[in-house]
Length: 349
Ligand SMILES: *[C@@H]1O[C@H](CO)[C@@H](O)[C@H](O)[C@H]1NC(C)=O
Ligand SMILES: *[C@@H]1O[C@H](CO)[C@@H](O)[C@H](O)[C@H]1NC(C)=O
Image (cartoon, rainbow, N blue to C red; front, side):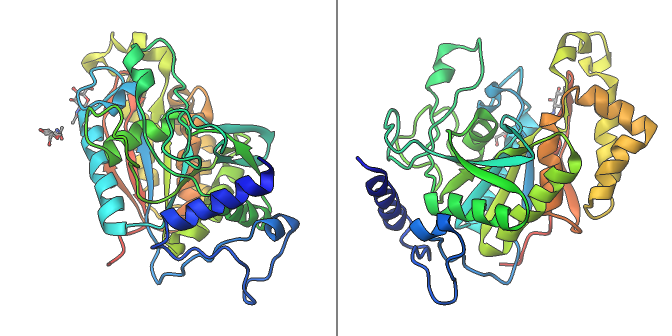
């Protein structure tokens, strides 16, 4: 099969599967073709709404978080809250698409953001060529966990539009053939599927889903900017979900056992830092004070020995810039923090 044929097939699939949504794949006079990229493969019309969808940050725990009663790597309260957020997104917001950012995908390319697209020639465990493949990116877990499925479709035109929007706003962007990682699909199991069903055999979300990587840098500025650019999709009936942890220090899980409640003290401390930060509307400067204030910097470095589980929160902060932040849930287990946040109000629909 040649590339043109595959792309045409993808477009046709997108159109037939989401025909109730207004996706138009051909440039109109009001939407001039801007780049060589879009010339071959046109952008779709985003539907302008008079409201913005809220942005969600989820704490995804370990891969066992997908199960309702996970002793380790789970948290019942977070599980229940994630489920209710999924119901809210699906039934109330009813978006045209989801854009997701996970701790488990940070680009290796400096200051670059990658956009995942499926391998259209790969059909194993897939319902459709344009389905997002799953990456079971965890090691040493029981074999049944590697059979878990979550079925969602990508959309090449949406991926291209995200790329174009990033590029036009000064962020280097490229499409990368890749599935979605457990930072996305593990919390999406409770959010969008029935508990304890390994494989529904159906699409688990009725709208396309595109994963976007963290920018290839630990710098808060560029992650915040990535969020700002993705925020452009909020009044186009897209929902942005960022997935990380408010506290994530796997190296201290063992050490946590010696503390009261078996929780490291800094987990309470850093969740409190974030609670104080989010008393004000989201801004880059507040995130930066985490690093400039000596006390919060210490708590941050303990809570995030590496930045990748925190950076999706900075992206969410950018997408919800100048808007109110609500902590929807929090808890501390071992050396993990379970902050779940919403940026921006729930629109009156
Ligand atoms: C979670 O939801 C289950 C099922 O609705 C309920 O039985 C349980 O009490 C909830 N637990 C928490 C901590 O919210
Ligand atoms: C919060 O975490 C503690 C352990 O630190 C756990 O015992 C409790 O069940 C958790 N609460 C919820 C609501 O899940």
